[in-house]
Structures are given as structure tokens and as C-alpha cells.
Amino acid sequence: MGRSQESRSKKEIRTKKEKKRKEKAVKRLERKEKKGTGGPDEMLAYVDEYGNITDTPPDMSQRKKIIAEDIEISVPKGVAPDPKDLIRKGIVSFFNDSKGFGFIRDTTTQESIFVHVRGLAEPIKENNKVIFEVEMGPKGPNAVNVKIDRS
Figure 1 (cartoon, one colour):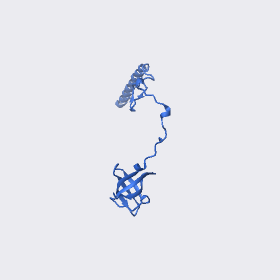
Figure 2 (tube, helix red, strand yellow; figure 1 turned 45 degrees about the horizontal axis):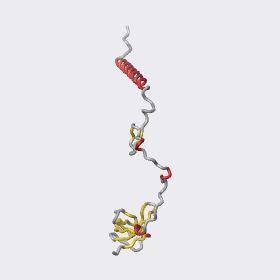
Figure 3 (cartoon, helix red, strand yellow; figure 1 turned 120 degrees about the vertical axis):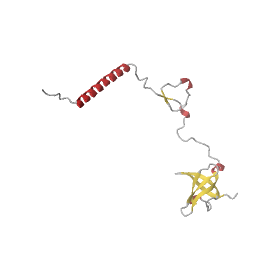
Figure 4 (cartoon, one colour; figure 1 turned 90 degrees about the horizontal axis):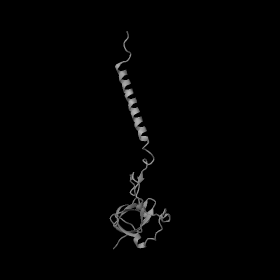
């Protein structure tokens, strides 16, 4: 008489598969029961005025009226700046004569502004106090019309 062809590992595999099948059936039943309660209203999310996602709808009494004509898409037209505001004072923090460029540290804003030898009105050296004008270049602010401050 022959022995059973089923080994111990085969029995374990079969019981694991059956256990998984039962778990899937239980989950399927749970999903069917919950299906009636779920809907598109539960999937809605709202964004509050600070940009946070919430599940509560916003309070309509707090809503602000916005007129479409008041929204500016381009750079707002402004008044031309006063020429006195364009003239700044600073200290030359670095200047390389051989390469022809350097940087000026603005005394009021502590901003580092690029200066090229073409923007100089007179020769400068490091740690000189200077008076200059600022123009926007392709890579940021550039100092032009740079003169030594003799005051």
C-alpha cells in the first residue's frame, strides 16, 4: 500500500493559500457593505485660505468679493523712481584689476552688487567708499557710474 503523495511542505502551502482565499472573501464582503455609504461627497477635499487641504467646506460668510478687472497679470505700472533714490553709497569689497570686475557692498541694504570696469567713472580699489547708480543687468543688479566718495 502506497504512502500519501502529499508532503509536509505541500500541506503548509495549501493551508496558506486557503487562508488567503478566506481573508480576501472577508475583505470583499466588507467592501460591499461599505459601498453604499461611500460616494463622491466623501472624496471631496477643500483648500482653505492658507493653502491647507481640509475635509470641511469653507465658510461662505467669510468669502471676499474679487473684481476681475482689479487683477494685474503684468508688472504694475509705477511712477518713475526719483533720481536721488538711484544713487547709492557703498564700500568696494572686492575688485580685480586684471579681470576688470568686482563687487560693492551697499551700506544701507548690505547687498553685494556687481561692478565692471566699463561702469567706472574713475579707478577704484578694495575698501574704497564709493557712490554709484544701480541698473538691472541680465544676471542681476550692476553698479554703473561708480565714483569715489570724497565726503
